[in-house]
Amino acid sequence: MKPLFKRIIFGDCHGHFDSINKIYQIEQPWSVVHLGDYFDNFSNDVEAIKQSFIDLVNLKNTHESIEGNGPFTMLIGNHDFQYLKYYMNERCSGYNEGYALWAHEKLSEMWDNKQIKIIEIDKHSKTIYSHAGISNTWLKDNRMEGIDLSLINTDINFNALRFTYRGGGDSYGTTIYASPLWIRPEALIKDMYKDEKGNLWTQIVGHTPKHNPTCYYLKNDVIGPIAEDYNFINLAHKKPKLWIIDCMPNFYIREMVTKDGEVKSREMVKSNI
Image 1 (cartoon, rainbow, N blue to C red):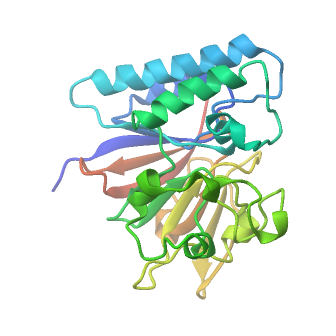
Image 2 (image 1 turned 60 degrees about the vertical axis):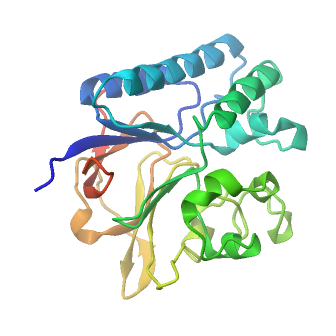
C-alpha cells in the first residue's frame, strides 16, 4: 500500500491571504492547489492586494523549499488574466489601475518561469483542476481535442482564453464556447470534458461565487445538482463530477493522494477560522 499525503484545494482568494495562511497552518498539507483569482477584492486598497499576493507567493516558495513537500500549484483566474494579458483590453469587474502594471509584471514573470499555469490534472483519477472548467466545445473550437491536457499550459494561444471571443460575445460565461477562465457551471455541465474513450472527467473549479459549495453528480447518466449540507461530508461514494468552491474562507477541499498525485479520497471541509 502506497503512503498517502494531504493535499488542500483553495478557491478564489481575492486578496485574503490571511485566511488561506490560517488554513494552511492548521492543515500543514503536503501539497496545495490554488484555483486562482488572487487580485481584485472590489476595494481600493491597492497595497493590501499587492501584499496579499506577495505573501502567497512567499508561502508557495517556502512550502516548496521544505524537503519532502509536494508542489504548491497556483492556477490563473479571470481576475489574474486581465493583468497577465492586460494589453488585450480584457476587463472584468474589480479591475484596478492602481496595481495593473505591477500585477502584469509579477504574473508575467511567474508565467515565464512556469510558476503559474492554467490547469492541473490527475490522470489516475481523471480529475481536472482549473479556475472555471473545460468544455469539449472549447477544446474542439481551438483544435485541442484529443491532446494531452497538460499541453494547455505550454501550447495555449492566449486568445483562446479571452472572455468573450466566441459564443455570441457572452459577457458572463454562460456558453459552452467559454474558456477555462470564464465558463459558468450552467454551461459547463452541458458539455463537460470527455476523453477519447468517452470517460467523463471530474472537474474542480472556483469562479462562480456561492455562499456554500455546490456539487454536481451523475444520475442516470445525467449531471444534475445535489442539495445537501456539505459540512464535513465526504461525497466520494456519490462520485460528484463537478465541485464548485468559490466560497473562501468558509470551505475548502481536502484530498488524500499518493506521492505521484493519485487521488484516493476527497472531501469538502467547512473552515473554523
